[in-house]
Amino acid sequence: MKSTITQTIDNNADRFKAISSFIAANPELGHEEFQASARLTEELAYHGFQIERGVLDIPTSFIATYDSGKVGPVIAFLAEYDALPDLGHACGHHLICMMSIGAAIGLKSVLAETGGSIRVYGTPAEETKGAKVPMAAAGLFEDVDIALMAHPYYTYEKSGESLAMDAIQYEFFGRSAHAAAQPYEGINALDAVLQLFNSINALRQQIKSDARIHGIISEGGKAPNIIPDYAVAQFYVRSASRTYTNELVQKVLHCAEGAALQTGCTLKTSFYEYSYDELLTNETLSAVFTEQLFAMGIEPKDIEIGKDHGSLDLGNVSTQCPTIHPFVKVVDEKHMLHTKEFRDLAMQEPALNAMIFTAKALAYTAYEVLNSPELLSKIKAEFAAEKK
Ligand SMILES: [Zn+2]
Ligand SMILES: [Zn+2]
Image 1 (cartoon, rainbow, N blue to C red):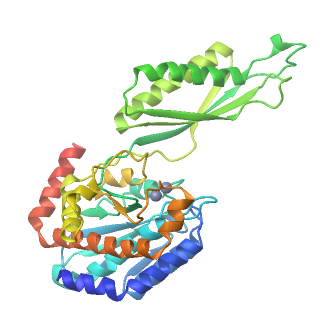
Image 2: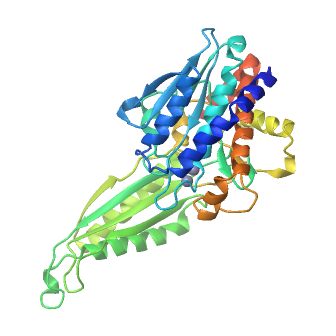
Image 3: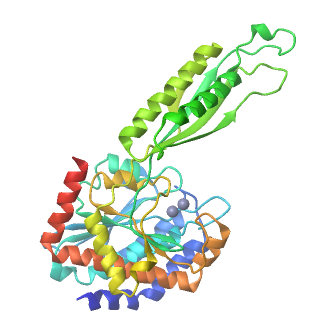
């Protein structure tokens, strides 16, 4: 029956490539992906999926469902389709969405026999305010048996880890004064920000090696002859686990409180973006995907161990259901994500072929799970143990 999946994806390959190319040529930023969302849901509706648009009042999100009518697992494929400012689709999300949708349409062709149901989650704004966060918080993945997606890259990498992350803003309020005439009347908010940076730099010596704390001064005063009464720093605090990230956030808060005390400022903290959890890769499911790649002719030496890739909003999904996020090779030259070199190559025919190839690998992976209750229970046992 795998041949039915293959045939279905091959028969639709030109359509899938045309949609991906359209999205690449019309890049839209996070939460503005109206054209992409429309094209993707039209395609899913054409193939018989039921479409719910604007999930949780997120205008460019969607959930597309195809139910076999027979009891069985719920298979989720996740679609991203947002672009980057100036760079367009330099992260290859125009490929991600059609890898997942191609896989869903391929898998649908055998669902009458396997039973179960397929969902495609259209998840906007991965690069900024990742919609997977509110979708996960609303429990939309809780009844999902497995969630799959793949990310374009210059090499193959097994699904690995990503860092839990909090985005925190520290606002310091002081009092302005003439910096030469009456400096003693002032309370310098910029000094508080500088102290915060210095304290964090001292803290670095005592933190785990997987932690990352990095920030900018987003407001630091108006003119050198005015003591700044208001200054703002924005930081990302990240580490390999949510638990340790929470600890770090407390330590950084103490640095900020100390800076406020030293300078006489008052402090206000807030989150300026969603918090991401770390990605919990389901190793059992990940191994099934890797096996499919081997069977399709990819050699073990070509698949690297998953390395750290910053933070992903998929982390929050992975705490709700068994999840994988492998990287797949779509370009032949070594270019990093978020570069125009990667973007240009990711729009060309070899990348589109890699997208079709990956859609098949994702569909075959889901097919293996649909066909083996033992495999699914192993996947779920690992998930339960990891969640504790
Ligand atoms: Zn990106
Ligand atoms: Zn990306």
